[in-house]
Length: 174
Image (cartoon, rainbow, N blue to C red; front, side, top):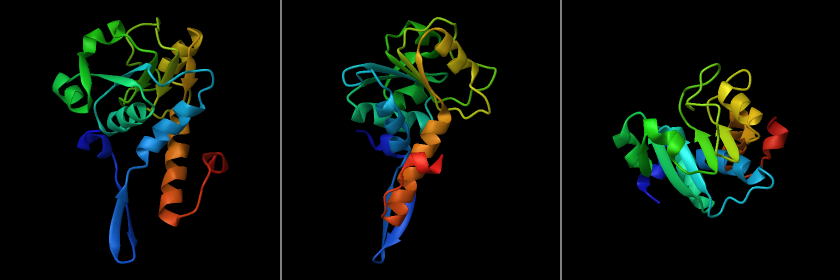
């Protein structure tokens, strides 16, 4: 893994006079992916839209699950810092079974250029009040979908578990 995989957000704690750090965003993405029933993730291809901190966490989570990761961002150089990159305007032509939106595009807008999907699963990390247009379109196309709130609950549970050295379950936070 690259150093960039761990830089999306760092939680700190002080134990026995020493500072410790971890990233719980990766668990926040990994756990909902693992919970998606009927999908084989190891060996599959993930396409991540965006190149910021959420994209870095998504890339790390996908790699931990044995997936090949491709990144599409409006700025190709930023995408290359996260992983194998494709041009933004070529994202719909890039083979994948899992599509993860790690851009800020949400609500009635969609980062996906059409209503056609090749993905089996679409995970939208952009938090919105109602299912995003991306997830509505994906669901209508028969894809399994995961809303951003699933990532937030899993990340929160991982963060609390780490901070307090006690297990927290995302279902109890919901």
